[in-house]
Length: 435
Ligand code: URA
Figure (cartoon, rainbow, N blue to C red):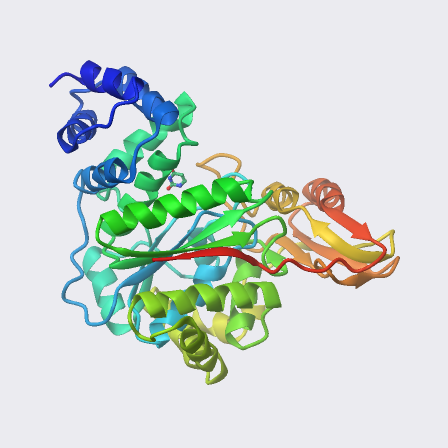
C-alpha cells in the first residue's frame, strides 16, 4: 500500500477501508509516513469528511497506537464526562464526587487551560498540595477506594493524537468533525471508560459557536461511540455566558465546594446535576434521568458528595483543611470592586471576553509553557437576568498587579450588555442526544 494512493482516494471523495486508515495512522506514528503526506491526508479528510464507520476505525487505530488502562479489576460501572471547554466550567470538580458517591467509578483524565478556556488540572492544582501526577497503580487504587481520580493525560496514551493534533494545529485542519471526534473519543476510551457523557458547549465562549456546529459534533460523538460499541450521551449546553459566578482557578474550587454544600448558582447546578444524572443512567445505576437527578441531589443534601471530594483531595495529597475552610486557600494580592454606570437588567455577559480577562489576570495561559496564578480571577456579582442599579457592584477582580486589573476591567465591562426589561432566560441545556 502507498500513502499517496490513500490520500488520492480520500481527496476524490472515496470511502477508506480499515486497512487504509490503519496504514496511515500506524505509518505516521512509526515515522514511515512523513508530515507532508499526513498533512495532505488530514486536509483531504477536512474537505471530504468521513462516515461514522471510517471515524470509528480512525478512533480505534488511534487508541491502538499507545497504551490503554486495564480497569477490568474494578467493581462498578466506569463512566466519564468530557466537556469541549468553556469559561467558568468547573462541572468536573462537582460532578465526579457526586457520581462516585452514587457508585460510579470515574477515571478522569483532564487537560490544562489554553486560550480563553480554563483547565480542570489547573483548578485542582490550586488546592495546596494536590497532585494530578499519579502512577498507574495509584490511579487504579484511587478509583477502587475513593471512586474517582483526576489525572493528566499520560504520554503513553494515544501518541497518534499528540502527533496528529500538533500537525493539525499548524495545517488548518483542527476544525474537522471526524478528526475532532476521533481525537476526543480515542483519549477517553483509552483511559478505560465504558460509557461517556459529553458536554458539548455552544456559544461565544466555546469552540463550537453555533448550534448547528454543536449538533453536528454531538451527533458524531454519539454515533461514532456507538459504532465502537459504547454508550455515549451528549448534552449541548449554552456557553454564551460564563458558567456560575466564578472564573479563575481557586475561585472555581470555592464555588464547586459551595455547590456541594447545596449553595451553587442555578445554571451551574442544573447543568451539573443533569450531566451527572446521565452518567448514572449510562452506568445503569438508575433507570431514568428523573430518578438519577433526584439521587444526585440527595447526595448533595446528605453531605455524601462533599465527603467524597474530601476523600479525593486527601488521596491526591491536597490539604483537606482548605476544603473545610476555603478561606485558607490561595488569594490574589488585590481585590477591586467594579460598579455599574448603568441601571437595568443584565442581558448578556460575553463568555469569550471574560475568559480573555481571566488570562490577562494570570488565571489562564497565553502559551502552553506559561504558569497560572492560583488565586486570581473574576467574581461576577451580577449574572444574566439580574437587576442592577447604577453604582452597584457588577463584578470583583482578584488580581496580583494593577496593570492586569486595569486591562481585565475594560474587558469584563465590555462583556456586559443591559436591557431595560428582564429578558426571559433560554435555560442552560439546549439539546440532548441520548443513545
Ligand atoms: N479537543 C481535542 O481533544 N481534540 C480536538 O481535535 C479538538 C478539541
